Image 1 (cartoon, protein in one colour):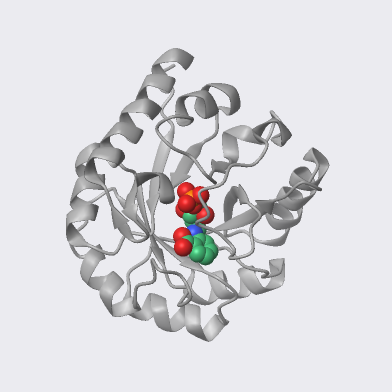
Image 2: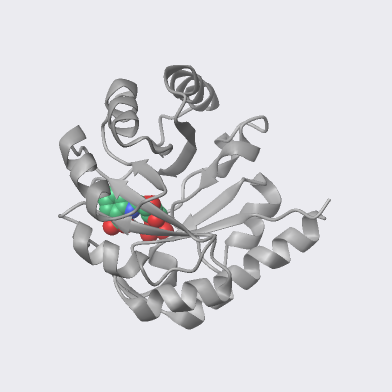
Length: 222
Ligand SMILES: O=C(O)c1ccccc1NCC(=O)[C@H](O)[C@H](O)COP(=O)(O)O
């Protein structure tokens, strides 16, 4: 079987960075609607950027503790195909917002030093049983500012049975992603800091090198 790890590049703000990510083979582009983030884009700006995407590249909208109304008004402007909830939202909050706009969603689970494997299994069960629109867990590193930290967490925490459904995130880079994919075998990987010149400004060469490294790992797995 040809293993193909999906790839999300997050926190894009410029047309040239989208073009570089698409040319390199990204499967999804993440847009940050969290105003405190240096990678923040308005719904209108996201719509302009999404208009440059070719078919079959997903537009993911990232929210942190947004209200249902904020999610609905964002999706009314920016044609997102997938939502990502990255704050302290509950299952009920995520499900209500996703159902309001009828979009599937990723739930970011932020992993810290006290997290154990059973927490991941319980979290996945809570969301899988709580919403037909739950599309999976995005596993990220627990930090103060919610995400986009450039810091890794302990990948050995990820239960083998969950790995094929998770999006692995948090501090990935061209240096560590081959090891991450071979060890964890996630459905997808997600990156922001590791492909940047500065926050919100991506580096086309780093994007290309990262995606090449993921493809090398896929070849090892096959
Ligand atoms: O990217 C941000 O600025 C951000 C701010 C607040 C919440 C989440 C945020 N990003 C979420 C993502 O999906 C990032 O890609 C993920 O946290 C990984 O980031 P990095 O460790 O920089 O690769």
